[in-house]
Length: 321
Image 1: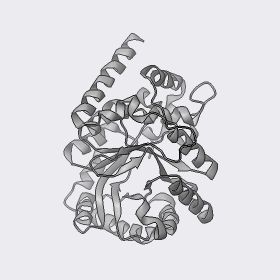
Image 2: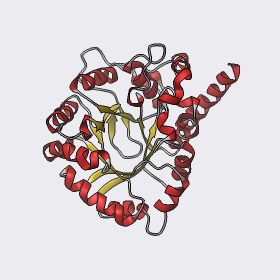
Image 3: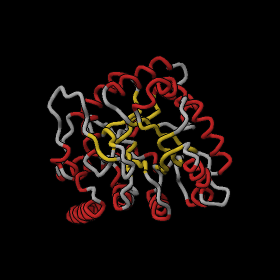
């Protein structure tokens, strides 16, 4: 147990040092993100890296209801209500629902595009494939540009080799930025923090979307092995898999969305994205974000300890896809 405490202490010191060097110390300052009064209509904001965009700490991911067939009305209601509540970052992907997610989001973007920072992704590793996906994404989203275009679910060195080949996807991202079809470039993944760390060490991506939850430290930790590098490089850092599609919750473990969200939002992230099933979930998550107070080090350590007996289930995505 003492070794765990020393490891955690060393890690916190590393991230604090990196954050200070990167000018992001406020991310780890509890006073900077104290909860707003009950009934507040706004959520705290944080800088999305060096993009110049201040993003709300809770954002919408384009999965769950937003990628399911036959849910256009429900999806539009969720997206519109989210924007009304202050959400100003929406993340989707060409692969979500085979384009269904982008189409639902696009039905709202046609009238509310200027209110959000809009992100999508290419799952192709090639130049040609990515450019075709971008063309379809812009059509689906009913916009002439993306604020952020990301490489989707980068898992292995083989992925990186293909992406950075002469005919790889990185050429598509760069050309799209030159043509002002996209503004910023990002990378995403939830399987291997070491592959992603190599990617951001070798290339100046603007953002990274990574898996972060209270079970992370027990298996190939993104928090320990990837997050400090992203902070040092002043990237926009977006957290995903916060509730691990519900698998983080146990009666004898993490028992509330408040605990799950507070744990990740206490880390030096810009925002978190969560897939929403219904308006009730949306309202609850926004309320949690509005009232956010960072965990103490002891609270964070306790949340991690609670997941120790079932971490494999709560981080199932690290060994899949």
